[in-house]
Image 1 (tube, helix red, strand yellow):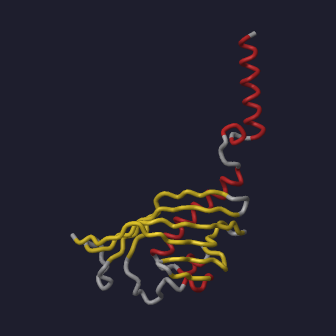
Image 2: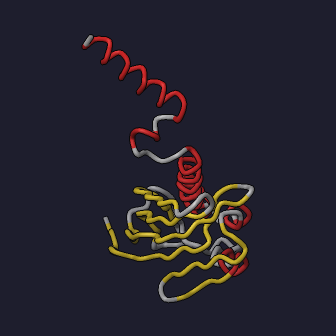
Length: 171
């Protein structure tokens, strides 16, 4: 009798998982939320690549048309202003942005907020950015973001940079 009850409970649990998915019994995110989190996590990495390579087209696609980007007390409003931060003429210092921790919190099916940690290494000598670079600035901080899901993926609707550590490395 005990084995029958255990077997019935096991079959009930298996049927619940099969019908409703694992999130129903574990408290994990539902599939739509998982997709939103994955899409919003991905654009943080896409942001780093677009920024590092001054790829304005890729950079623009990461933001909603009415997005805001706040950095060092300045607000860039709309895609045109946000994209204008990237220099056309190659004068931008050689830099690499590393995205580390990404924590996305869905609000509903199409919006989320998030905090992303970053580390940026930026060459001080813009005239000679030939690796290996031995004199550079290091920035570590957080992006505080708001996201919106669009037909072509997750986009930043608001991004605020909060620097935490800065310094110069000179080897």
